[in-house]
Length: 353
Image 1 (cartoon, rainbow, N blue to C red):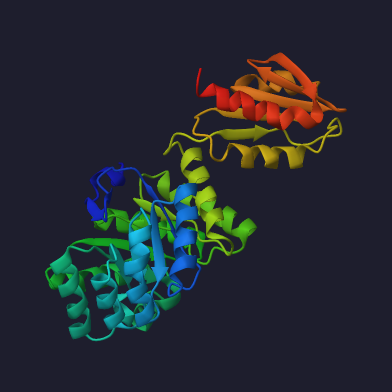
Image 2 (tube, rainbow, N blue to C red; image 1 turned 45 degrees about the horizontal axis):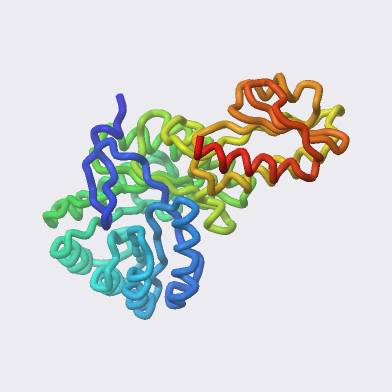
C-alpha cells in the first residue's frame, strides 16, 4: 500500500506536501540566522541546487525578527526551528515563518504550547512535531526497556495528541534516530497509525561519506515502501551536498525524473586516463543542464564504446585521445584535453534538437 497517497495535504507557504504530491527536498542553513545577507546568499544557492523547503535555526529574538527580511529575498518556504522558548515560536510566526518545527516536550507547560498553537491556528501555519531518539522521555525508555521504534512512535503520537486536543490538526510529523534500522521500523509503525505527512531524515547521519551511506540506506528503505512526504539528508558538511544527495536518492528510487545521470566504469589496469577526476568533472559539468539522460564516462577505448551503449551519450579516453560515443558508435575523436568541452557542447545542443 502506498501510504504517501493517503497522507493529509499540508500547505507550507506556496508548496503542498502529502496526499501523493511529489516528495520535497529540504535542507537547513548553517549560517547565523541573524546575519541576513549570509543566510539569504546560502538559501539562494540552495534554491539553485534544487532545495524546495529551507529551515533556519531561531535561537534568539533577533533571529526571529531576521526571518522577515530573509523571506523577502528568497523564493521557497521557510521553516523556523525552535527549541525550548515558546516566545521564539510565536515571534517566528509573526515574522513570516511558513512552518515551525517544535518538540512540544521541550516547549514547556500546556499553556505555552497552547499559546503557540493559537498563533499557528490564527495564521494557518503548519507545525512540524519533531521527536528524536536522543530526547525520548524517561517513562518511554523504561516502558520499552531502552530507546525503541515503538517508544519513538508513542512519543510522537502523544505530542500530536496534545496539539489535536487544542483543536489543531495542521501538522507534519518527524521521528528521527541516528540508528538507521530503528528509524526505518519507526516509520513503518507510524505510517500505519496516522495520516499526517511525514518528514523523513536520518539524524546526525555524519560526515559526507558515512552520512551519505546511512541516509541512502535509511531513506531508501523508508521511501521504497511508499512512506515519506518530504526528506532531508543530514550531513556534516555544506548544505549544498545535502541537496545533491537527496536528488540522487529520489532519482535512484524512481521517485523523481530529470537531471543527467552520470555512469562510469570502475577503474582497471587498462585505464589510461585520470578516470576518477574525469567522472567527477563530468558530474559537476552536468549539474545545471536540465536534461533527463544518461552520460557514460569510460576509461579505455577497448570496452568503452560497447559499455557506453546503454547511455544516451558517452565519452571514453586513453593515451591523449578522447572519443565521443552515441548509441555504441564512435561519432567523434578529439584530443583528450578537449573531451570535456566537446561533451558540454553536445549536451547544450541536445536541448535544441
